[in-house]
Image (tube, rainbow, N blue to C red; front, side, top):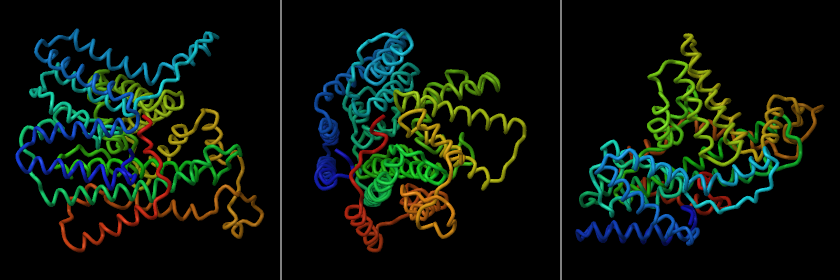
Length: 468
């Protein structure tokens, strides 16, 4: 069930919110929490009911294991829990990747399992791993199964984050949640803003970008750049929209979820980009991987190596493919180059730094989106002009002797330019809605934006991060 579909917007969301506040109003907060756990299970089962028992069983195993680890400080149990969760993730997500590569290396014929990847298993796995480590470190002091189940399954973040820590939600559930008109209206507006980003911008961009990435034609200079920037904008507004909608739904329930997206294209380095893009994933990788590998404590070279390894693993987390590994490797390389630049005393003005960072991230999006390394290399050649040049018919007057392309019209350049101005210039939606007060004028903006989102949206594509 997508956040942008009619069954969610008209039925599931309003009914679950209404039931939640009806129970909270009469002081039955415990029942309200169990109700939302049930709603979240129903939400998950809407996609594939066969994996509901897996989600419930996995949550119970990790809850009781975490409590035992806290009580005994057993490092052995912690290691067993980590192996269990990483093994479960590896089985569903990476077993075919390893089988295919082993068959290639050893010239064997092992049959791939072709398992259906449980929705959101990467996010769920990282969340329970953080929970087990926090139990071992003594940072958890609440072992209510009800609150744990709510925190783990709360449907706004269940499929694509944010990745929660114990301290993010469970402390908010220890008492009755108080309804706040201002908070609720901010959540409603944030949800509609996210819906507009997803339906009106990201889904329409996909209609332009997807054919360019699957065409058998050799993409030339403008075509390659349109493809790369177009996908960069698509995933930006897709994930930004999801993050806004998830946090907005949380606010409608009176629950504050951690901020997960903060205008990343304004970053002046790739290191800063990862402090703004998928913030809770970056937090997890920093706290539970980068620091464990030595981080900044073990000298410059060790820190650079730790950053590179962390980004490679972060790339592999996104998908079982060498394209994702190379995407992570590229970002690790960018971060290492940036650290060397800073260490050598390099300086760059903000405009140039932001531009350079955006070009680097855009170039990396090519391997992230491409279905093969060969396809990505071909597009990179096109971006460098090695595949030749061709202009759309609308620009033929600028260069009458140039070849013309039928893959795009030229209007995409205007659309992309407008969206880039938005990305570089405007404050993110989360900060914007914090300053908005309920009033008749803002209700009018909300209604206008809602109707535009519903009537002018493209095809209801699934969120890009749902596949991870």
